[in-house]
Length: 309
Image (cartoon, rainbow, N blue to C red; front, side, top):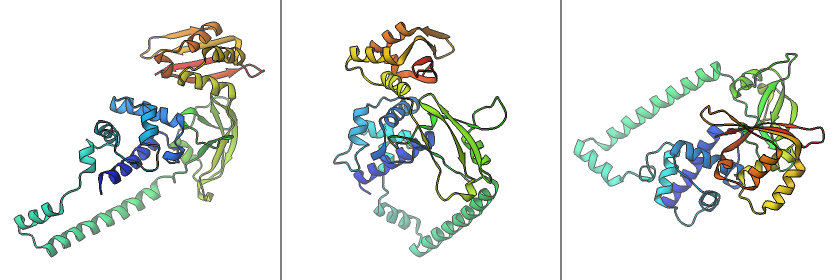
């Protein structure tokens, strides 16, 4: 395996690692959205303490094939993200000549080494079959539920939604992925899917033992909420136009509560203060995440609760 092949393998491993945090993303680098890019940047900052630009991801990770390798320092960052110490360790291929020399030094006949390797492989296969059989009996079948934007058909980040079972109980806690999998193992379940950025949706999920493919739940985006989300993350181009748009989508009685990191308390903004904050952006805005959102009857945003990462 040459270095370019190793880099393609590394890109595949990065996607697999990303899905551990965002399991509802089942696409490829080609379908990796702008929000997925922001999520990946945040993960690299959190786990590797390194900063990667959106342009770098578009240049080196999004293409299906690459003409040249990125800088080694960036390759090292991606390797650490997937659990390998460095790019040298990831791309290292042992030399056949070295293996032959080692066999001669140890005076091990080649056929004897082959038999030992074959026996070891057989033992591992038997153990793997036994463990797979055990866990397949004791654990519920994993049933991924794919969430899609109703209009764009793009995958939705699972971190942006909460799932509740629809019952007669007035007060409920959101279900974890494991709880949902266990619940629909043998019976249909009616669930409510909630998100600050999408309209509430009630859907009946079929039991997993009757499913051929993962069920797809399509959510209708809240246009005003999506605009505020974009304003928090995007670089400002036309501040006057943004100000006019904010005046239209925000209620005159807007209340914004920003929960500060580290238990430092909560900041309050009214409409005027919040519009000023978004039209004179600072780096801290990119660390704001909308937690809950409430609308007026006319659709304008009445209340926002935001956490600061």
